[in-house]
Image 1: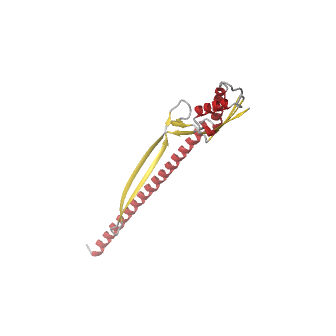
Image 2: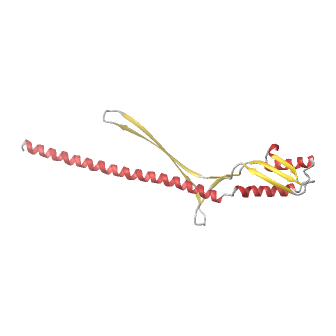
Image 3: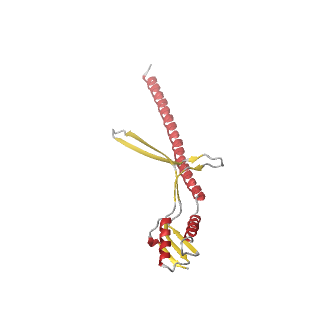
Amino acid sequence: MDFNTIKEKLYNMGTKKLLQNLLIVSLVAAILVISSGTFFTNSKQNRNSIEGTDIQLNRQSISQVTYEEQLESKLKSILQQIAGVGEVSVMITLKAGKEVVPALNTVESESQTDERDGDGGTRTVMQNSTDKKVVLKNSSSAQDQPFIVKEVMPEVLGVIVVAEGAESPVVIERLTEAVQTVLGVSAFRVKVYPK
């Protein structure tokens, strides 16, 4: 064998090896692009599913007006039974709406990668991710309902009572104490006026 033949075979082998390496790198890059696209799409879908569930919870929750009306009605009926009190009107003001807290399934993951460059330097890359999904309970209806951990009713800001017989300080005191006891509010949040 002469030198040129050997040189040509080595050159062809190097070219084949180079092509193989380029093909492998291209395949790995394509896999990374596809998997990262799937990862980001899943993150967006999870975020959208949580937001969609929040919207659904708001639609299902009792409205603030209905809760106020229920409190006012019950309070009115009990206050009218107090001695010395005639017809009563009640107005209740709430701080905010009802808060519904769904159960969340939280998955946290952490990964560490050590990278080395061609000059001998090293770098450590830490990656943390958190995935939250609302826990759904199976129901016979078409859509699964979120599993509710707790419902927080709104805080009472103030109460106005307008009552027949509220000219008397004794009746005013009875009405104020009754409202404080039922709603758990301070005396300064309750105002009683004669009708």
